[in-house]
Image 1 (cartoon, rainbow, N blue to C red):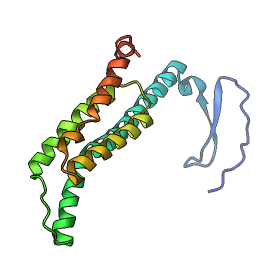
Image 2 (cartoon, helix red, strand yellow):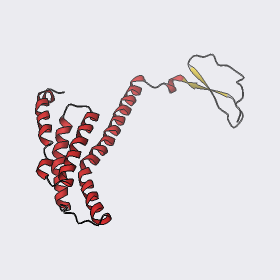
Image 3 (cartoon, rainbow, N blue to C red):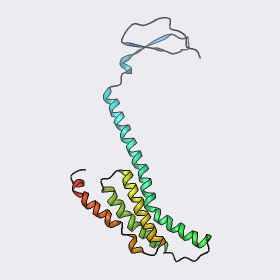
Image 4 (tube, rainbow, N blue to C red):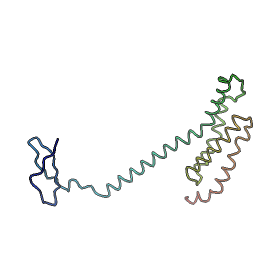
Length: 171
């Protein structure tokens, strides 16, 4: 619908000109600027709430990435056993699924707790976690050297101990 041109112009600085078609025709209406005024502190509060909400969304998406990485040894052990037993028809001596679960949690949870406290960027933490998980998967699932699989916990603990004074000081 085409808007008609205004026939009168209001020069009053207190009013805002709002044009909208009415049932009788299209007459200009005066709307007070006071009713349209939004205080700046309300806008800044809204902006702060939006910023906090977007930060929570980013943290939630990173949590999904962390959980997938921590559960990857378990998923890999199931896939490895399935591949060799069903597809290749080769009898593989695989560890029991409950032991695989306990081993994955026994490695992943301490590593995640120490990684959460470390003073690295998220991308660096993710890169180090992927390296540690690949090490763990290789020695826990592929080779039968399960004692060697837990070796990356030692460097993580040493790094955490080196950074502990900065962590206690408040980053």
